Amino acid sequence: MLKGISPVVSPDLLKTLAEMGHGDEIVIADAHFPGHTFNSRVLRADGLDADQLLAGIIPLFELDAYATPVIMMEAVPGDTLDPSVEARYRKALGYDGIIERVERFAFYERAKKAYAVVLSGEVAQYGNIILKKGVTPVE
Image (cartoon, rainbow, N blue to C red):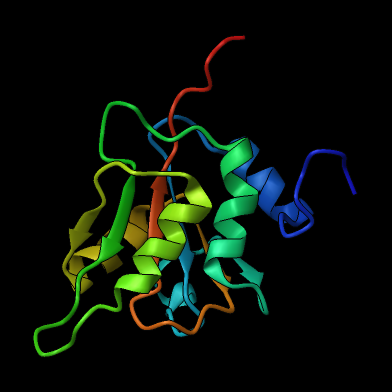
């Protein structure tokens, strides 16, 4: 364990976050997401809800300030979104900005180009989220 780093952030996830550059994207996927179908770099976080992972990641991860940094899948026609999912994610991230919603297959295309996919234990429908990394400010 390291001081100041949430125990939900595994060593592999910490390494992945450190390797990412500005503009790179990471998918925090729900338990149903076909991560291995769309990306060769897949990490497992079984048993953890996505909001737990987001809360662990966000102190280590600057969101992109030049593009919409938070992307979620929109509902397939005929389905409805559970607003509590987005509310949980916003709270975990401390984020009140715009969340871009993209069509299911467009989300899959983004997952193919993402730096990595983290398969969580999230069971909420449409519980997938993409974070776009920004530039860490100089202190």
